[in-house]
Image (tube, rainbow, N blue to C red; front, side):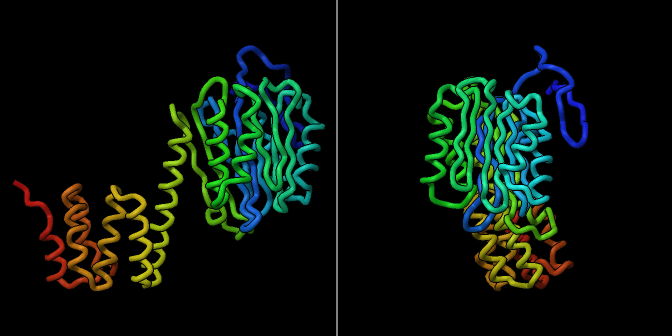
Length: 328
């Protein structure tokens, strides 16, 4: 981005007018609060490189912001700061807009921790452009092929079953299905944080995925969401191991492997969990598949008993290693 910003009294203001080299991050997005969990999120797609680094902002227990069109990223942190201080989404957005001489080219949406929403589409956003404020969500789009995009997003979000991720992705899919960005597609992102902060940001950030540059960013974003969910099960398996809950680890590793059947790591730890619950024979075909695909896993295996991750005696360990493909 080649926008020229100065920072004054906490607000980002243009130091001049838009120049020919300035280019807008036109896009479509959704901000929403899950009425059941309180989780807050933003999902977005655009014909612009790395849209996830500019448009979506969210903080656990505070709110979420999407800032786009001739984007001023400062709307993100400023909006969150104001909502953290007790302002509603409406109050936060209106306050920043009043201080921005470029508001006519902005498109911004916010949702706060109570589900109050606010959106703004400046009169100089490139058509087709518009937004809908719904119940605990907003959808917004600009430089679209037609004016069907944001109504289709709202409809999809309202009618889709599932969690916040499923519903926001459905909104993005619906936008693309009716035409989407007039320029095409390039990048996408989804950011979800917890409704109740723990004081540990790494825990509160539930999902933070970006597709920086792709001919099919929504297809790739769906794939990454599935990978993310599989690794959540893998992480839960690791946690179960830490707590000596071997049955729990077996269950979580098995679920992860089912979700990503080609992933060697998930197969491997599933096999380890089987051994640790006394199912050595069931583990051997899985170990063989992994070892044949990558012998380094066989190299790793003898190290695990030394740190109590693989509970076997020498005979059982040798049996596991015996399934390794013999080198010619």
